[in-house]
Structure formats: structure tokens, C-alpha cells
Length: 356
Image (spheres, one colour):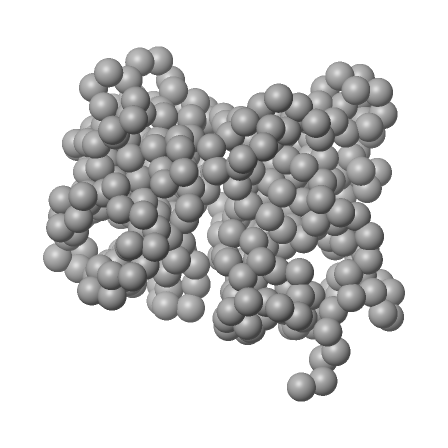
């Protein structure tokens, strides 16, 4: 690691943006690493004016990548959420959007050799239940292809597609063991298909479900009910005291109105997502398919095949998902999504001084 600057690649992955680092370029001590990342991103400060963060949870993210010692993976990926206005760096969740950039980054940094046309990168996720995802990256010749014609909702411009496949999560899909629970006075479904999520209907909260993120964030009474539900769900889902963590997410579901299967507004946890997270979307889709769940009550009856189209504030998100029950507890047999990723810059980032 340089005494002055640190090698860094800024990438858009899906509908998020973050700083990508090789693990060897960061301090090995966790406290030193977190302090450095706060200074790199510019936290704590609502504007992150003295760092490369974008002043929003979706643009204050970090991916730490290294060669994997696991024979079943090529690289390890640790996601870190850097709080914008608090000096907190959390590894309590993963990020499927930044995951879309891990394959290209690993190829660019020489951790994986590019193959002709498409390079498959096996990525071991180091957060939460972990597991391995497979990223299919377009690699004409010996380079990563970033230009393309694929558009995803929440990103105004086209880029090259990155297909992500996910194996079943190792933990139970229903952490409480029930399709529904009553928490904080609300009937909800607690689900974890790689991201702990609580599904609650818009009707139960007395809203329409089509409000903008700004409208929801501006409703202090609603925010209070959502946070009370989140704290109760954290305990019920075996996550303990979640007051200082970013999980579980609260996803408000309602009937789709624009050709999708289900509509969502997701607290992440105190801001409202302008779209929806990748692994969060998988959890929402899985939860909605569980018989008797609150999501199942609003899931469109016209859904066919394995695709679930989830509407969100800036468009839609398609999840390919297959659920198995076999007379026992439901589990996700397979899930896959399409994202895009693009390298924004590659160079050296200069963190502010540690002196206050």
C-alpha cells in the first residue's frame, strides 16, 4: 500500500457505484482499514465533499477483492457499506449490484485470465451466509467489454451485460420458520435468500405503495413505524440488535401497475432505494412465491414461468427464480439476474489526512 495514495477503481455496478480495491492494497487491520475507507469516501459528511462518495448509500460503497483460497472460487468479494453521515463501515450485508463489477475488476487486475468471448468468474461472497456467485463477463480478446446495448432500469445509459447466477443460500429461506409473523403490530413475511428482507404490504402501513422515495422519506410517522418493525424483525430473524446495522431491509409491497408482477418500495434501512438491490430483489421474489406469504397476496396472477418482474421507483427488475418445497421448508433452487457494469476511472485515490 502506498504511503500517500491507494490504487482504486471506481465502477458503476448495476444501480450502485463504488470503489473497488484489491485486499492487498488496504490495511490488514480492520479498524485501520475502516478508518481509511471513511477518509477515502469522505464520511461522515452528508455531501461527502472531501471524498469520492456520492452523498447517498447507493454511491457510498466499497468492494474488496482478492484471489480465493477456496478451490470452488476464483476470487473472494467482501462488500462494505460506508455510512454517509456517520463514521460507520458495515459488512453486515452484501451488495449484488457491486457484485456485477467484481468479475470485470478481477480480470482487469489479473486475478482471472480473460477468455475468448465470455469469461466466467466464480466469486465467493464473504458477507453473511456467503455462497458463490458466477459472473459471466463479455471479454472479446483479452479485454473486458464495457460498451454494450443492454439497458437496466435505474441507469440511463446502455452498457455491456453481466449475467449473475446464484446458488441457493445456505441459511433457511424463512428465518422465523413461518410464512407470516406479526411484528410491531404488522403482519409480515421475513425472508432471507442472501439478503435479510421483511415484506410488508402498503395497505398495512396505510399508504398506496406508489409513493416516491422522497415522499416516503419525508413521512416521519411512517419512518418510525418502519424502523420499529425493522428492530423487531432483527430479533425475530436471529440477527440480534440491528439498530446500528443495515439489515434487515424493509420492502413495502403492493400490486403491480405497469405490467410487472409485484411493486416495491424498499427502506435500506433509513433511506428509500431509488430502485432495488440485486440480492434484495431475489429475496423479495422468493418471499412472494412462498405459499401464504404477504407478498403472495399481491403477486400478479398472470405470472408465468420462472421470471418475477419487480416494479420499483425507477422501473423494473427481472429475477429468474425457482422455488422448491418438496413438502418441507421452501428453498431457492436457482436464481439469476442480468446487470450491467462500467469502469469509471482507474488510478490512485488520495484520502484526507487522519488529523482532525
